[in-house]
Length: 174
Image 1 (cartoon, one colour):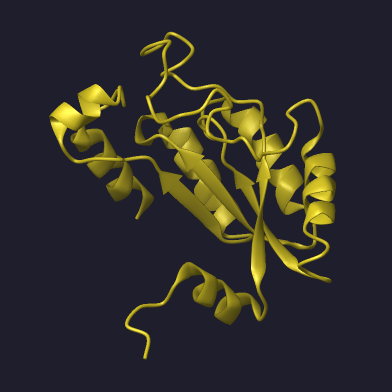
Image 2: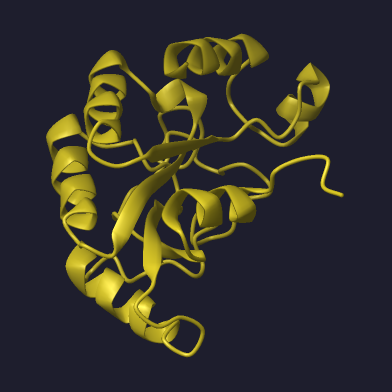
């Protein structure tokens, strides 16, 4: 008996088959690395912005998707995918650049959804509007980094924003 619906099960029910994430790189950085907030980054984030399995940012999104799907070819035939902008902060760029990257990913007929990992302090109104518009085309999942609700722990890991910013981002997304 299942007491909850896993993401995997939800996706299978929604799309009729197993869905795989393809980690893409939009060539982003992070305000906690570029000097806006700090230059050291959070202590849990790798040198690759925790996107060590993401595509090569020197390649187009279309090429990254092609390579990512090819890497999964042994697991999935004629499958469906989620375009996953994981590394660094997936909304930390001008909105027109984000629009170009996200729409290129969503143009792939095998891509059934968009997933964006980001910081709650990197969701200005114009980015929220873009995500809402794209969500009307295909589902958009936003992965917000919280890590802890405790102020001292947040300072220790150098997160760079208070809990209230996360709360506001959640309210803005719902």
